Image 1 (tube, rainbow, N blue to C red):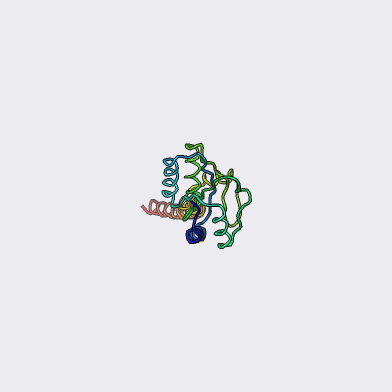
Image 2: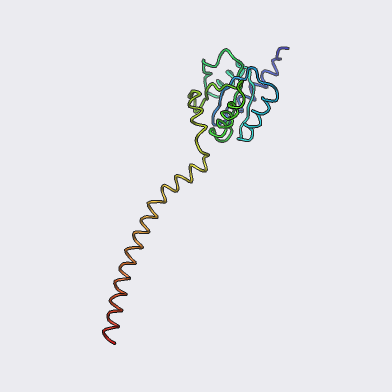
Length: 177
């Protein structure tokens, strides 16, 4: 049964909203997946703070254009589903990459990040990135290490001066005795 004009407009609006709220989009084909497998993928992406939607290609193209992006030409010719990363792209990419290892019918076809299409291999590399909070902690650790070393050197210098003064004081006490 074909979609009505109203339903198409609703879908375009929903896709446009998801695209505008997303940090990135991960494209996948789902041909041959069972309903149970599709729910497994949706749940994995939802846990990663994303949304996994089976899309109609022409409607997604209109939504991308409304959001200021162009539809990658390499995505024609197969049923398309999109993982919308509402928070962090690496977590959604990891959910899809891990699920694709378990479900052979799920095949990644790249991602759209900042208006640039990235390859499936780059999606796998993005999936290996640690969460943003971990990256921030690592950066703070890198910035903190030199400061901690400087404090240690300064403390050692002050301690040496105090030890020398203490040694003179003890020497003076033993001479007076």
